[in-house]
Image 1 (cartoon, one colour):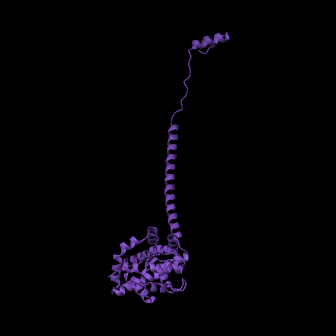
Image 2: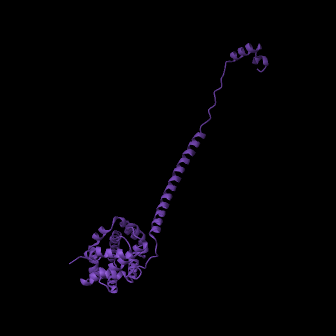
Image 3: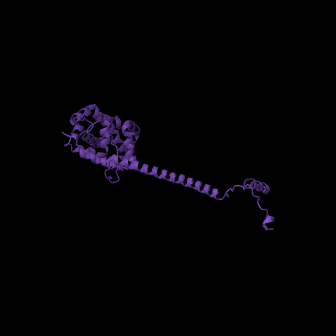
Length: 280
């Protein structure tokens, strides 16, 4: 009996990719690349919810998605029926939009740009593929559970068993996106109301600004500390210099007789002695 992951691989077959690429007017290789990223990403969302106490909600959502499609979503014909005869006419895609909002707390638009850049397709094509996978994957889970008579606990167990394999399917270019969805709070869970839509660019900008502010604050504190130490050193040096007595040059003292002889030689006058002045 095929596993859940085998059923998912069989549903998103090369034949389906070829038909969808023709409908969208995109290269088959580009659509295949986009699907290879979107499918495990949405599966990761379902696995995360089922393992976070929302297994009954995932089961109910999957069963309702399966019953509402009116197609056998494990076949190419059924998948194309969900897509509709044109990009705009697929009513089932509305369900995919709602599923993405429940899984990630926002609509498909926050994921469109990364998928578009990753696969090299147009924005509207990326949006259509996201909503298609968002519609079909839960319906596949519901169909798989019904075929094996699984209830919420059984389906959650199947999802948990495939967690490692699904994460390994995530392309390297999208692994950071999945982590960012949970890190930034965009993946709010099925039991919470959908958060206001935010672009991925705005989330990254907010995080970078936060990191920059933290860095500036730390460096400002370091600069202030260094400046304080330098000023303290100057103040201590000035205090030490002020306490030292100024050095006075020592007076030159000549013997009195030498001074008298020098004066008499230069002027012809003999200096009076103290006795002659009557001072003593």
